[in-house]
Length: 236
Image 1: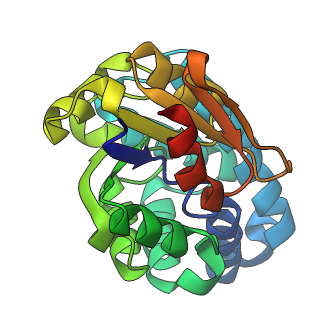
Image 2 (image 1 turned 180 degrees about the vertical axis):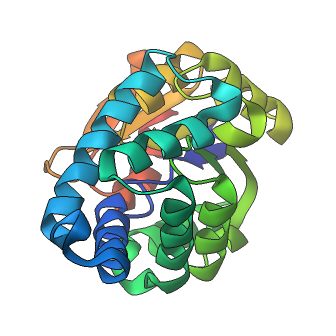
C-alpha cells in the first residue's frame, strides 16, 4: 500500500523555464546590454544549467557546497559577480508570479491525494540558489500546506539519485521505502534514485500523452500529475 507520495520540485511542481526567463530579464534590467539581450542571457543560463546538472550527476561538485560552487559557475558564465547573481536570484524569487510558475495540475492533485489520506512529501535537488528560496515560493504558491516533510540536497549534503537521500526521507517520514512513490521529471535523479532505494518511481513527461504502469517493475510514466492518483491504485 502506498502511504506517501513524494515530489520533485522543478519541472514537476514548478516551471524552471519561467524562473530562468525572469532571472534573465532582471539581469538585463540591472546590467543592460553589457551582458547582452535577455534572450542571449537566457540561452547562456540554459547552457550552464545543463552543464551544472551534468557535473552534479558525475559528483564533480562538493555536495556540501553545491549551491556556492554552482553559483560561482553561473556567475563566471554570465560575466558578473557572484554577489550580483545572488541579488538577482533573490529579486527573481520575490517577484515571480505563482500563476505563471505553478503547473496548473499541481494544487488539484495535491488536494485529491490529501483527501485520499495519502501523505505528501517533497524531495528536491538544489543548484544555484539555496532551498530556503524554494521553500518561500512553495509557501507563497500554497503548496507547503499539503506537505508533511520537505527535504533538499543542500540541507542534508546528499543529492538525488543517491539512494541515501531517498532512504533518509523514508526515515524522516517513519514509513518504509516500499510504501512511498516518488514523482519527478528526471529519469536518473528521480526514477533511478527512487527505484534504487526500494520506492516506486513515477516519471512525469509533460511532452507526451502516455500513461504507462509496469507494476512488477514499480515504474509508471505519466503526462500529467492528475494521473498520479490513478497510478497509485494500479501499483497496489
